[in-house]
Amino acid sequence: MKALVKESRAPGFVLKEVPVPTIRADEVLIKVRRAGVCGTDVHIHDWDAWASGRCKPSFTVGHEFAGEVAEVGSLVTDVTIGDRVTAEGHIVCGRCHLCRTGNGHVCPNTKIIGVDRDGCFAEFIAMPASNVWHLDDNIPFEIGGIHDPMGNAFHTALHDTNLPGKTVLVTGCGPIGIFAVGIAKAAGASHIVASDVNPKRLELARAMGAKSAVHPSEAEAAVRAATDGLGVDVVLEMSGVPAAIHQAFKLVRVGGRVQMLGIPSNPMDVDFATEVIFKGITVYGVVGRRMYDTWIQITQFLRSGQFDPTPVITHRFPLEQHAEAIAAIKSGEAGKVIFEVA
Ligand code: NAD
Ligand code: ZN
Image 1 (tube, protein in one colour):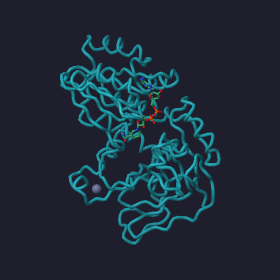
Image 2 (spheres, rainbow, N blue to C red):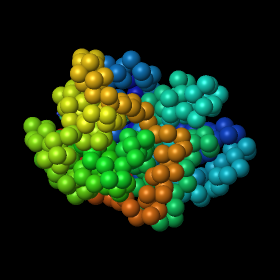
Image 3 (spheres, rainbow, N blue to C red):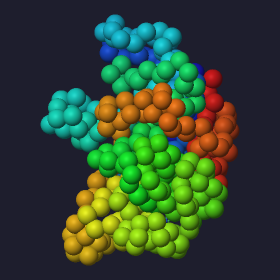
């Protein structure tokens, strides 16, 4: 089969023929139809410090996908050939303290497809049946293919935030931040301010329901105006940029909540006394998607029509145009970028 492979410990990907994966008794083989391209894939492509410390070439890249089940292992009971599915890409152990207390999203034994084992930028992928998530018949494969990043946004926006009537600041309008704007809106937030340095992305944030979408230099004025000077109830930090993280702590109201998804590329200073402690705020670190509360939320929001992620998808490429896909993400002009695999 055709697969996009990280072949060596150097920048770049290679599209090549590799064997179709063989499945274990508890796994299924999925024919990939659509796959989402993510910032993580760019890190692996560029072979930066994180990628070279974590990944062991050669392997097939990609972790966001949807497709049709082509084969099932002998122990699989609830997945059938022909099922339309996506899957949780974090494969957890199911046996550690965290997994056994319903916190599999932070399982220390997590293996990620397309990072620690073969991924989905290929005609077929093998997945544990326990990770498979069925798609409703009316959900297109391209929406199925972005359940992973949408799930990051659902987890960030909805975990312990109690959004109905709340004021929200979303810092960073990359694809995940833009999803979060739409989700917060659908969940009943009363006023959403979104910030980004990129005007294209602010346009998308407005289209998804932000009342004001502004440059970070204007975020404080927008937040003060919307909250009688108080600060927002909830900040969704979706950039990982230190300036935005400080702004999140500054613009959350006393006693509010900061949900942190964005990953700073280096250690950063935080003045805990003034930024966190004396503000009495709660900070929640987001890892992936909760298993499987987040997946149920995605399905229900899509099913009800409350939330439509389609406008966030801006680019579609065949696997052959992998260089163009990576370039589109790097340009900063793209929303979500999709591979049309088959
Ligand atoms: P992205 O890089 O496309 O989006 C980040 C956005 O932040 C960009 O649009 C950028 O212009 C904007 N930005 C830059 N400076 C800013 C500032 N001062 N104020 C506000 N916005 C600013 O990334 P993405 O794919 O949407 O992912 C968002 C973040 O989440 C990234 O840091 C990514 O690494 C992280 N992430 C975390 C998890 C997790 O499990 N915690 C999972 C996936 C992604
Ligand atoms: Zn575990």
